[in-house]
Length: 430
Image 1 (cartoon, helix red, strand yellow):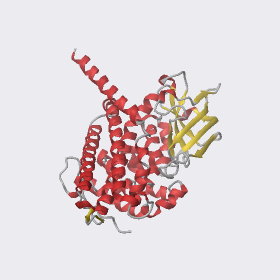
Image 2: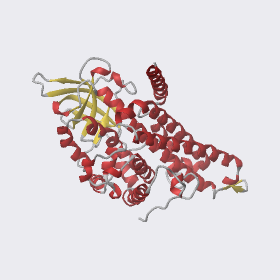
Image 3: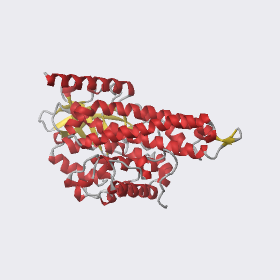
Image 4: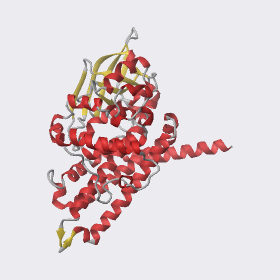
């Protein structure tokens, strides 16, 4: 398949794609953009419907993703460790070249080239980073090569039937055996993305008493006693949303990630990356909707003139445009800040901010999808034809609102974190 050209339609692409100046992007970003756009067109675009039925990217294609340098950046986010130079990195980039804007571009092109297929990587994006950040060298040496080469898959297992956004109240237990060599895990996890094909489950467990200090993080292989069943949700099959049951699962203590009692902290520090990832997904879907709706409105006639010549239609585009460009600027500013902060400082200063960004991304994503469905008319309700992408995105819009912390919880978090930082700054003056 030939390389897909950048669209010239208004708001279909970020402004810098058209050559407008930006302080963030340089030659390596353009090189990565062109590489990923072409790769996705050649390897993903034609297979989305087939893989939706399968519920995952086939193993041989998933391993090709690793060989062609896509998986390492997905795990790394905004910084690729120099010791990972042994693995392929997309577009031939070196670890020291990679930054958060490369991460943004990687996902932007995957999301827009194959929106549904991109959901197959969610478990990797949110499940693997705790290994890199907190696991022992021995555990990293065992598991990371399997993950980075595509040999094994991973997911994040936090949410439970009675503990979603209220993470500190998870009930899944991990009790040590008398000889101290194993944890015996019992409990349930629900709404776990990519749980069906996963070989490893990065799991929040209770090793101590109630509350956050009793939580730990345990990497659980697919051992006897681990049972998974698929949950059907409206956003499609590639997410492979899963209900997981742990029944007396015997996990070696070497699979503890970090220290006992630190699971809540590890989980919270992982949210910046997850919420930023959801925002990447949202803005990519928004631009798809704007592109397809604008193309339609420039050729569809109603009441004797093109739709785009109707003031009410231009009014809709004006309101969508101001929101997508504002969202783009906010995402880029947070990427820049995370680039210039340590992981610890970024978690401290931007935890609430990324929560609010994720909320805004969901609100704008749902708004634009709904408005574009109205502009498309019946085509916006049809799973084939010119409105198919808009129909799919509008159907899955709530996936931007609930996962990663639901809207009301994150609004409250954003305000509480801002107040906490303000009070801390005030004390520092005294």
